[in-house]
Image 1: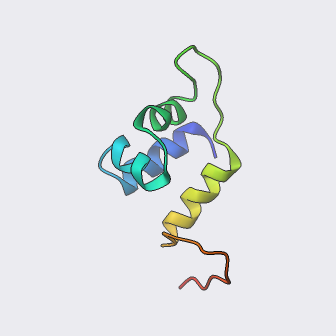
Image 2: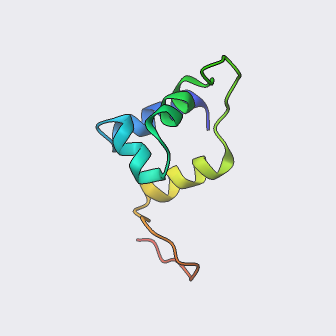
Length: 73
């Protein structure tokens, strides 16, 4: 998932970075870094696989997971 795609996903699903951060268990600064594709010191920050999968799960309506089988739809 490219950083620009993450930013677009966040804008579709949440009104603010803070709301996204709360939902995904991050802080707002981390969400901003993921959207920008870089840390505060300028280091490149690609979207980790677990974040991309979290976005996919959120999009499909999965808000919590306890380890069992998942039925979507």
